[in-house]
Length: 580
Image (cartoon, rainbow, N blue to C red; front, side, top):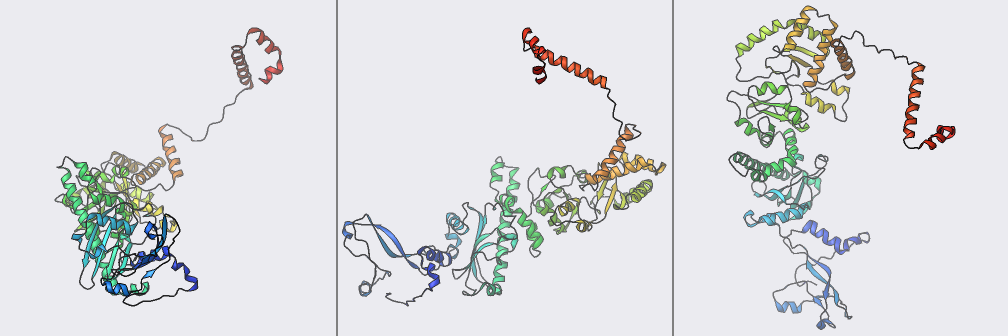
C-alpha cells in the first residue's frame, strides 16, 4: 500500500487480459506518457545475481522513496517471493520508473546540444540517419505552444509515389501527453517530410480527433508551424546563395558545395516545394523564393529566381524559360536561339512538376514569367517603329506563302505569321500565350486517363516562318509560280511535320509522313514510279550448274581428310556417300 496519496485500482475485463502483459503495458506507457513530468513506475521482472548472504533472506522492494526514515518504518513495503534454491541468479519483481526521458522541447534551445537534438530526432522518427536541419521555438500570443521541427537528410524511396497518402510526421502532445502520432492537420501536404513534436496546454486533453479538428487553437498552431518551417527553409536557402557567391572566389569550391545543406534538401524534396507553390496560394511568394533552376548560364548549377533577377539585363522586363523532356533537348531547342542571340539567361524546365508550377506562376517580383515557345514574346531592347516597318514589309512579301500555308494547314493551325524574332529554323510551331506548351501537351497525353476528349482541349497552334531563311524564300517563289503543284504540297507538309518535331510536338501520323518522305526522295532520285519491280526469272540450267559446282566443292573438302584408297572406297559406296 502507499504511504500517501490516492490509490486507484483498475479491474481488467476478461477479454482484455493482454493489457496485463508486461511488454504491452510498457509500450503503451512509452508511447503516450513518455514525457510526463510525474514519475510512472511499472512492476518489472528482473534477474539478479545471487549473493551468499541472500540465500535465505527475503527480498523487500519499496515503491516509495521517503525522506522521513520513521515514516518508512511504519509503511508496509511491497515484498515478493524469491527463489532460495542454489542457483547463480534469482528472479525478482520490482518497481522501475518507465518515463525517464525528459522533453527537450520544454528546455531552452541554448541548453540543448546538437547531439541531443540528433538523438531525439532518431528516437521519434526511427531514422538511422541524422537530421539535415531543425528549428526549436516557443510560440506565444493567441495560443502558446512549444515545438521542434526536423528536416530528414534523405527522402524515403517511395516518398513521391505515396505523396497523397503520406502524412506529416508530427507528434501532437497536450501537456506532454501524446494525443496522436501523425496529426496531418497541422501541416499542409507539401510539408509532409517534416518530422517533430508539438506540445500545447491550450488544447483539451481527453477529446476525440474530430473534436480536436474543430478547435480554433489548432488552426492558429498550424499557421505558425508553416511559417516557422518556411523560415527554416528560407534560412538554409539564404546560406546556400551566400555559399554560391563565395565559390568563385574560393579555392575549395567542392568543399563549399558539400557544405550546402539547401542543395542537399533540394535534391531530395525539391518537388515538394514546387507542389507547394501550386497548392498554397497564401505562401506562394515565399515558396517561389525557395525554387531552384538550371539555366543557360549556370553551367549546370542550381540558381534561385532572386539570383536570376539580379543577373537580368537592364532593359530586360520578363523571365524566360524553355521546356523539354531533358536538359539535352532544351539545349537543342530552336526557341533558345533567339534568346541566346540577345545574351539572355533562360530557365531550363524539364520535370513535369516544373511545367505545372509555371502554369500556376504568372510573375515574380513584378517580372512576367514567359515561355519562349508561346506567342507575344517581347524584349525590352526592341525598336517598335523598326519592328512595325519590317513586319509590314515581310507580310506583303510573303503573303502568297502565308495564304497558301493557311489554306493547306486549315485543320492543323489557326494562323501563319512572319517571325519577329529570328531563329535558325525555317518553320516553328508556337502556342497561344495562355495555352499549353508542347512539353505540357506531352505530359498530359502520357497520363493514365488521357483520351481523345482530353487531347481535344489543346488550344489551336500557330505557325511562325523565318523570313530570312533560304528555304522559306524559295518556297515562297515556288508557290507564287505554281501553287497547284503536288511536289510543293508534299514539301509544305514535310516542313510542317519537321516543324512539329523541332518544336517539341509529337508526330500526328507517322505513316503519312513516311509516304510523303518517300515521294520526295523519289523525285530527288528521278524515280517516275514507286511500284515494286517484277521478280527475276531463274532458269533450271543455272540451278543444275550451281548443284554441280557445289558437288565438286564437297569432293575437294572431303579429299583433304582421306587418303586415295579410302577416297576410292568412299566413292564406290553410294549409301555412305548419300548419308554424308
